[in-house]
Amino acid sequence: MSCTEYKNIWVYAELTGGRVSQTTLELLAKSINLKEKLGGTDKIAAVILGEHTAEYSKLLFSYGAEQVICVEGAKLAEYKPRVYKDALVKLVEKHKPSIFLFPASPLGRELAPRVMCRLGTGLTADAIDLDIDEDGTFVQTTPNFGGNILSHIAIPEKRPQMCTVHPKVFAPIEPIEGAEGELIKEELDIACDDCYEVVSTEEKVITGIPVDKADIVVSGGFGIKSPEEFGMLKELADLIGGQIGCSRPICENGWFGHEYQIGQSGATISPKLIINVAISGSVQYMAGMDKSKCVMSINKDSNAPIFDLSNYGVVGDFRAVIPAIVEEIKNRRA
Ligand code: FAD
Image (cartoon, rainbow, N blue to C red; front, side, top):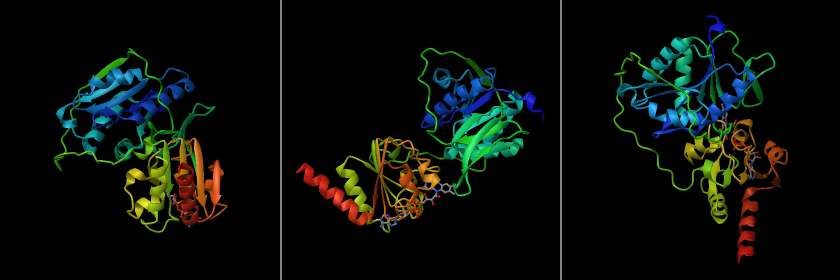
């Protein structure tokens, strides 16, 4: 394999519930920046698989794609990892992109490693930043070793350089009305995967505002010892019009669903206010909330790393602090 044969930046355009995912648009925006740093000669392509995919090309052009490479057909109507992997491998072998970015969504995390394995190339998982260094090397940044270090990863000898990228670390561009590009419709000979059949899909119903859409979040961590104690946080959240969020151990305990988890492997949020309760502030947690406008944290340990990121900090037991805040709010409103 000669790396010089490979050119262009690809973004896997993910469809969720019939819509192009927000992370896809974020990756297109970052690709514009990477292209500039690479000298401006690479093309930015969105690659989309599904039953009727060409119809998304207008939107993808408006968000920065210069090419849309689409494969359509009934065999691609439902996402099946092996079928999608075969299609992407064939596309890569034909077009030879240099960089191939995927959203670090459940689908991207499943599909990208399969494609990487088949192509025998390299893949960085869950990147939180992408850049081109002064030598023109594509560098992916990801937290490693329990989040204690940030690794800067390059894939110097293999192509394409693959990467799954965390949601919300880049902002999409303002869509350019009427933007045009090249629509490439590929006909591929795709084998079915008869091992299983998708009978139906149902979107999970989430009550209330999703944590990544809320303006105010009250987030609880592993210092909270029972679901009942979370009641205090819920009371505070309701009082100030907020939504509940949590750190990963709380989800692992089964107290809340994954959709409430904030962090590297959960939601990335940027609310106007977040109140962190009994959360230590691991790199993985903070990666999901460090863009919050105002951060308040309650922790009994004055050395907890979460205070490094906080605008306001209370050192104390949340069991005493939260009822006091709730009472004060009620008094002032009375
Ligand atoms: P702890 O670290 O146990 O902190 C509990 C805190 O509560 C302590 O600081 C303690 O002082 C305080 N406390 C205890 N009692 C009280 C009290 N009564 N009053 C006030 N304070 C009190 N974690 C995430 O959250 N999100 C992720 O997306 C995520 N992704 C990960 C991905 C990978 C690949 C890996 C390896 C880990 C990931 N983690 C993630 C886990 C992460 O490393 C930490 O283990 C986790 O964030 C710790 O959660 P915590 O702060 O709630 O718990």
